[in-house]
Length: 267
Image (cartoon, rainbow, N blue to C red):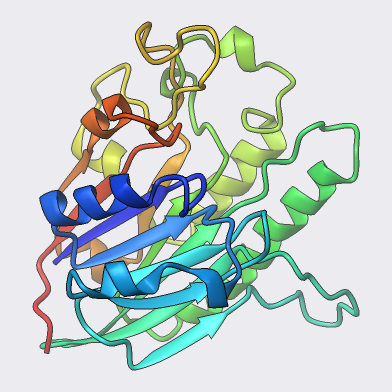
């Protein structure tokens, strides 16, 4: 089973690229982020014509996540729950979970779009850290089920210095802030395996290149798109890759697909 994560940076602007990529890469489950579309306007017909089932959690003009799958999900959950006792409602569309039948049982797959958090001296950074705490709490509960779980998405966190071309450039940025990186480590320490660094220690491996200052041709990138696997999913990990060539397509997203091949078969 091939599971992919891709921040598409606008489904309508990148629809042709998405359709071409789906036909070329053939993921079994594709987790999209930043679709920037309400559910009723999502261009599902063209995607469904390629044999994919579509589930979305959208928001007009901002955010938005989706699950495209060759099999119909048994269950879909939208929105990351708030922390116990919280009276706050979060209307940002950043989280969708699908449960899919496989021959060995089920696999849970999440498409998540973690807040950017910049500027750090505004309310955006505390929101990011709180969102990561909510994800940590939710993941603890899901891990107790002892089922294969994949947390795929744009985490907006650079884990380590070698995950960016120039660490000094990112000092003080929410993506490289110690609180952000620490929160990601805490999530990983629950027992998750991050796919790319579990399969390679190669330098200059990135998933995002800014549109500005020739970042793509200079390979001045960062790695902020991650697939985290629960122990039950990590045991089935066969390979992981970043489909970097997609960044060279016409009118590209600034992110590229990150994929993991897992030893599961659809039921």
